[in-house]
Image (cartoon, rainbow, N blue to C red):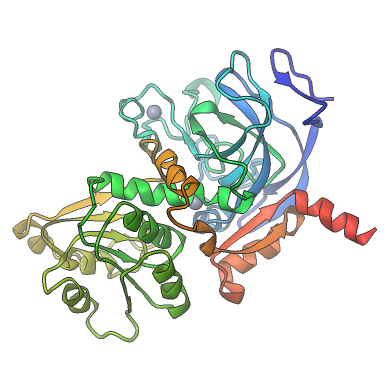
Length: 390
Ligand SMILES: [Zn+2]
Ligand SMILES: [Zn+2]
């Protein structure tokens, strides 16, 4: 029975085994379902029973290529590392001195617990921690980014710093709970752009999960008009349902920049949130904004070496921001919108699989099988399935 010294548990209501089932990354693209010990929360940490975890494009980067994951200063392969970062669950054990959360509280979890001591962490920019990945040996600064620099959510239990927890209401489903971080990333993009977007025009480029949440959050913040561009009509339709005033299918539109300008009365928009990672997207974005406008790059492009009209940026006083993840407690603000049902994030959840079916879930996410957008994996579904088989 799991009973580490100084850790508070409630085995009657939330029994915790000593060992858990978890996926571990072998070589590139190689996941093995195995057993691991259940980790022990330290000071300012809790143990979370993972009830659901969503698959993100960045998980695919980690599993097939390695970065941005960094384990013990290097690539994450063959290090007994468990990926997965967009998870939610239930607090089931409290580390020494933790009184901020009760056992049984349902939580969404942010990915990054920065070191808490560097310049950026102290500014609330913990996703830009200067001690990223330094959490081992004699360079241990206590940094955690679950699924990137520490074990993540493709298992049954994980420890989390209390700073990464966001309480969610009982009315919110497990699946929706995994989307709090996705919406939080969109909220961080709009936060970094200035936050006050009521009445301002916003164009979101790329209707992936973050782009669709950017539409929803921008609309909830009062932006007008909100324009969404992309290549897939089904996703653009979901964008409309989440609040886009206009959508542009760039495959059917020869000049997307001109079209976006036209949709906003001939001038460019005030803000662009770039979520497509397409190679020409940055240059398009700086031409979509009006003079003095702002562009936030919220997608990790695979090719970073792309031509951008720098003279246009300078002449027009355009601001260009890059963001990492979901800093400045943006996740809490996103959750507040979701709790108040200001938008229905579940529109982007398309599939759920059992934890032991993770490879199928990854295939659905990677190849967009059946128009998959957000694919979720649940450990408890294994039990449901087992009962059905008996
Ligand atoms: Zn992610
Ligand atoms: Zn830091």
